[in-house]
Image (cartoon, rainbow, N blue to C red; front, side, top):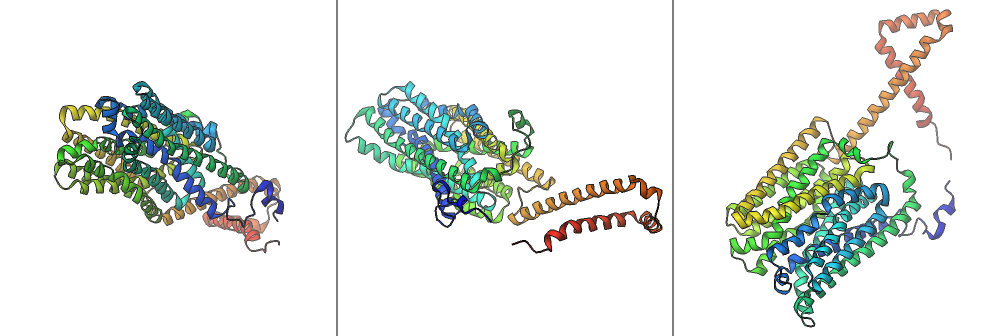
Length: 519
């Protein structure tokens, strides 16, 4: 029996306490903290977009300077996001890594606000650069947290819920920043009121940092109480950077989708306000409202789509359907004058569905020891695409207009659709689990385990037969009955082999399955 003292050590609550790490309450609190880890970073990421007119009027930034505030965020993550995931795997661990990256995000938000407050453009750029260093690496660490705390049928739902609350940060930013700016304007003037508004916005990052500290304490406590570290299987070999070359083809196709699909989402939102004003003659506030619908729908629908995929599986099928729906959304916006709410709502729904089905697949195709690096690679290549595309999209709009920009977005979506179809083909050819239902996945895993056990029995049987053949006394003094059995075996060796395997198999199983357990 378990030592009673083991459950009451060092201030830990008894197992029947609702705050014990083994209870659902503990896991629910952890889930809430995980959801708000990225709320602050998403909120502050879009503060320039919510106050775009104020940046131009108060800080006197032109369009190119304003666009650089977004582009500079993505450039460091082309490399640092991948390194950040590697550091989580090999150096910091998920707890310390999350706290470090959240601290960097908070410092970047404060530096950016201070740069705006003193109207120093170089300091604004530096603040956004620091903010970018921690922002995407933080998302990699949070993904690792999710996989450590949740698994199996829960994974899709938790990924969807975490993304939902993160995107809610962007939505709330668009809703409240203009009101905060007007309130601050009662006490400050010029660019100072813009800087103070951004200081207030940075408090959301401070709140997320508090969540990181609390979650780190809870995770450390759970690891000790549940002996989680001892229960986890260690990899046979340590992971090295060169091992990324051994990642499966399916993983790299997932990375292609991460780049190509999101190129048709985030740059569209960044430039969407002017698009709706010019093509549909919307007023600025109305254009801002329709532009924020993608984030709003993502926040509302992601958890439900996560539950849907948890219940049905078929991740690859859902990904393909979501990409096709996104193509239809951009087609409506580019080639028709149908109310843009139709296209944007369809875009928000399909975007939420793809995110709920895509990101959990990475955990299915890479080992656990390499997950942080794998997520880091996906985030890194995605940021490379976004950093280049924001600049490229500006060139397209300046020279050819928004219609050609929509054609560019459609081209990116067709590339992601091709990658998704290839994943479907490869997974089907290899009898993989990516597009199976949850029940079929469990059955396939059990079948593979049974096959491996049978193969081990066959190997053991062959070894035993070889030992019996090489034994000297049996060859020197043959028994008549043995000779008769040997003759029978020579007549039907397959049946004889099956009988031997079956007898040895039951001799190993019966003592442990039929005999009563000891009290």
